[in-house]
Image (cartoon, rainbow, N blue to C red):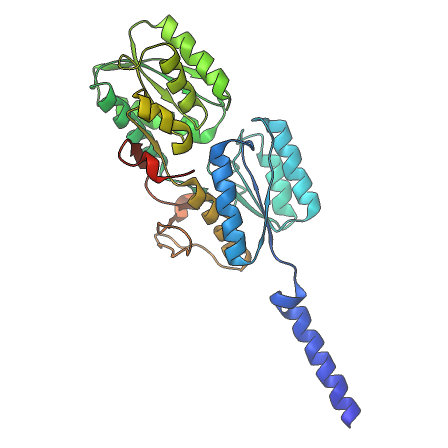
Length: 329
């Protein structure tokens, strides 16, 4: 009789070990593939992802191409599928090109997400968005208009021409431009996530358009690039630079007067939210329309837009001389 009880106890203990997530399963492996690694913006997202992994008890895998290379990004995602990660979030360099490999991930039972920029809308489970696209575009144009005294010619230096987020922001900037009839967009150029290329492109624009009054750097590398070009050209006070970038890269240009203000959000929080959202879905939960979620570890209350399957971190932030020193990302 005692032997039977012993066998029963051993069976129960074994069953609990096999069923318990704490003992029977490895930690969730949640991967994030940025557009490229090694730039301050995505370094900040990596920092947030690592913090979330520590807080939530998951494993965070951060890997990406060293340039905005679509083919390399696809290869990296394919490798993650082979490794059997539980969730993959990606900031696509090319939303269309990335779709087939994300379909493959989905077929393997992997939670598929986009973060920072969207793509594969028919495949991904959720898009973790830093802010509503129209608000980013409107705010950027409003800051440029204010700095230009609401008149004059300006240019845009974007990064990848296929980047969904950048193109969407530009669309809303042009929509907002209709409210500023004395301002004129002269051209849009591309610098491919390369600060030096952005400097060169902006210097070319300054030479080509002698009456230029403003330049938008549309991404985190082109914004400091155009500010540096204004500085090198000796045009501080004549041409204003603005755009979307991180305080660590824009601070010198706010200090020297080339930039009056610029736009962003907290990319550390965005990285944190990306990992949190992946675990939330892996735990079997579903996001609900209009719900504001309490996410320990970030300052905002993200909300969900069901029609677009989009989780929004919060509103965009404006940085200027009054607050640029308050942030270290």
